Structures are given as C-alpha cells and as structure tokens.
Length: 247
Image (cartoon, rainbow, N blue to C red; front, side, top):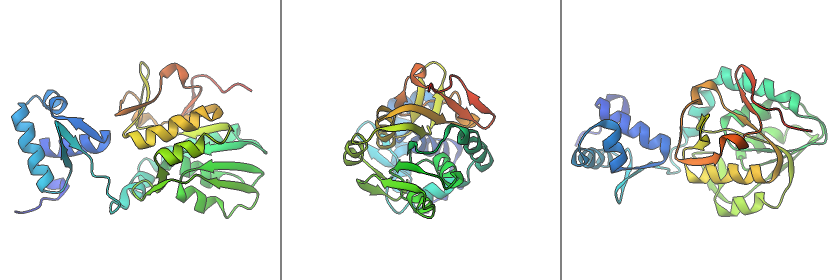
C-alpha cells in the first residue's frame, strides 16, 4: 500500500484528518453530517486513514494521534500567526507588575509572553517545560514548574496530577490561550487534557486574561474552558477586548 503525504490526500480525507486533529476526537455521525456523506462512506474513509497512519479509529468515531513522536507540534504552533502572538504579548505586558504571581498555560501564545517578560520580581507557575527553560535565565523571576505526565507534543505536563498540583497554588493573574472562542458559548480547547489544565489555572487565579488571536474567533472546539460570561478579559492582536480585570 502506498502511503500518501497529507498534502496529497483527496479533499475530503484531508479535511477529515484536519478536523480530527483540531478536535481531538469526533464521532462517525458528526463527520457524516458535516461532510454530507453516508455513515458507511465515513467508516471507509476512517479505515483508510487509520491504515495510512493519520488517525486512530475508536468505537463510533476516530481520535487524533497524540503519540510522543509528533515533536513538531509545538514548533508548528510556535511559528503559526507569530506576528499576532507577539502583538498579544505586548498588549498583555501592562497587566503585569512586580511581586505578582502569574500562571501561564503551555500555549505558544503564553510562550511568546514569557519570552517578553522583563527580569523583575515575579513568580511564574507553569506546566510548560519550554517556558521554564526560557525563564530560568531571568534571575529575578521565581519559576515554579508543575509536574505530571509529560507530553512531548505539547511540551508540557498534563493530566490529573498536574491539575491537582495547580490547585495547591493561588495566583494573582492567569494567562491562557484557547483553540476557539465564540461569543455565545465561550472558550474552547481541542482536547480534554489541555482544557482541564486551563480550567484549573482559572480556578486558582484571582483574575484571568485569555490570549486569542482573531483567527480563533467564532470557532468552537472539543472541550469547553469557560462560558463567555466568565471570560474577564480577552486580548487579540489589536488589543484588549471586553472587560478589564478588576483590581
């Protein structure tokens, strides 16, 4: 059997792979409705895509491959919309003051923010190994790394151990990203592991700021992070959107 590069897949098959990778998992019924083809056609597509190594079939659907060999995942996100992420980081800096305790999720948006942080008295709590590595070179920033199971794809520690550890802290301000934001339903992520960490960071912080570039607006996801009314403040590449954090 000839294995096709993703760019060479027929249109629907490529779209299915992108959809599964974006959401983390999806049902046959949902794919059938979204692509307007029969359930049996989707099942054949998923069987072929699994044989080609693009996804994993599950009972009634498919899930994304989250294997540790996918080491380019963070690097791909890091370079995607880099100008927008740099702009969001610059807009976020005025909210950060000496002696604050911050929580940063393992998103590439927060990585850009971490790199721009001035070397001043701060405490930064993060589950991102890459953010830890960047901040240890700033001696005035106290860095607390949150452990758990390490996922190379995200460059981060995720899972129940990570969430439990986050709940041991209380921060002044949490910065987090999302896979999508909709005015009606709020912030969403593409998988349960990342969504769980972001929810935990929000619960363990007095205020929260979401970094969400405009390419993610009016997009949903697999797991909800927070309802729209619970988003205190949102920053995109143009600046601050919505309510400012209070005091």
